[in-house]
Image (cartoon, rainbow, N blue to C red):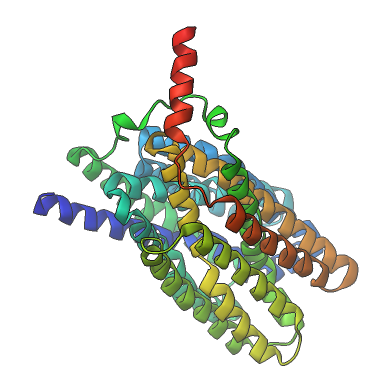
Length: 417
């Protein structure tokens, strides 16, 4: 690789990191203003939670679409589309602040596409086109750790700004950020990839047809999907209900901000450490370990005791597991299915991820409105993530990629026709 090529790749990795960092504002602004928004619209949490439930569901439905778009048009062009749509989606409710239905539609549809188009699926495709196989895990961890820095830097900032900033001003500011700097930077990066010949998937990776037919016969796909279901459900609980939960147990605002920052620090460290571990350890055992850590973290929320200690303990354990599940699942997608359809397969898994998120957001809101607490939902999340860890350990021990066999079979069927 020429020096200029290495320099370009480093710049593209940095760009991916920045996009992931700034994309956290789409959910961060909602997370911090969830309770004020419910009060603004004069409705219960369950009514407002439909916006995030729809967001989670639609972002899942959009993930295969975003994967196909990334495979064909390129990952950074996909980011441009997401940034522009996200800017419009967050600006619209500020122009019509009295309509809950409009807020639900704009955030739940446009915001969902935006996040799907700026985060894990296109970034996974970007890394696949920039790096050789051995380095993909570490590179993907490095890029996606932009979300970790988002927790570290932006969560305390939102906590500090919330008493002094209205939700409309916050949403409008994020809209300008996405439609301006994020869209422009991604467009410039896409042009650089075109000029360097990095925009297209490798021709030898196989045809882009019948993706579902290629994965449905692989038991490992269902194992990955089960784990990702729990991953999405727990992440969504954090995005929407964690701060209200902590407020309910009377944790201090300063301790909540510190815990979110600590979660981000541990997420950053674990993401990078996962990339290194995946080159030296068996990935099925690593994946199982991360899901079991996630289960322990959720169990800590049920443990009670001093809320100041509980918040920090949860942040440490959950942060240690946060990105490991995504990094290793991305690596499995490339190994098992190849580069040509990796984006689409990863998108299918993110659909399952977001179905878990949808259920977690809405069930959490219903549980709170009905009982005044989140304990039942948290207990369900403990069991789901533990099951995902067990299934990963037992079901992903084989090392043979399925893509060559299935693609060969597909070609023979096409030839027979």
